[in-house]
Image (cartoon, rainbow, N blue to C red; front, side):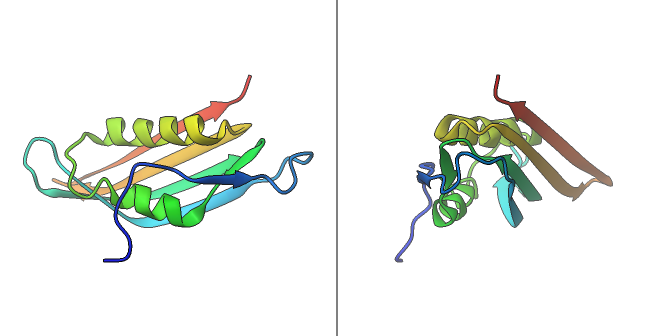
Length: 118
């Protein structure tokens, strides 16, 4: 297999660091495992950020999201961990990450994490 999942987020220099602009990613095929039942959990992640000096490289984001496929974790933990990892990698001026978790047992969950550089 040419690609393997990884928790390493690659970056590249922001081509316009003097300007505030938004980058948005839509990740509609996220999967991980329920930590209690081991059954798959599915989510759509929307990531919007204003870069500072660095941007996230797209293929590394795909491989990063893939790395969760066989991990068990609660929705809140996964969503916050993804936000923390992005913040650590690129130190964005602003970040909003929305985890829209699909319905399980008749209940859907939306977890939203926001961050603004101080």
